[in-house]
Image 1 (cartoon, rainbow, N blue to C red):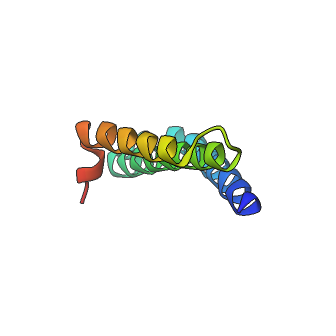
Image 2: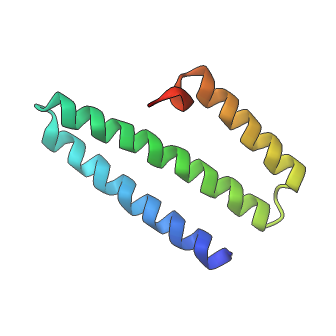
Image 3: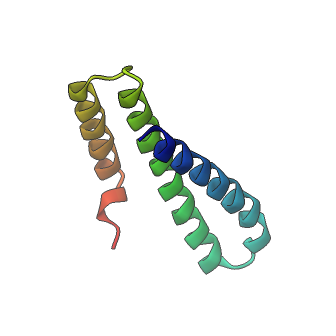
Length: 86
């Protein structure tokens, strides 16, 4: 599981860097810029989930603490409409 989590974290970091580098290049295209910002939000959330999983794996969070953090994150996402996207 450790290697898988590390690989996911590296991919997310690389994808995030790519998106951040691309956003200024599409500033004149609202549709593409919106798509990239949506992708950036998804990547940032994925990074948060990977971080929580790493904390669980490393013993920094208990299973109950992990579940509580996931519940809190889901509630925060719902509050700003992130889980309501279609």
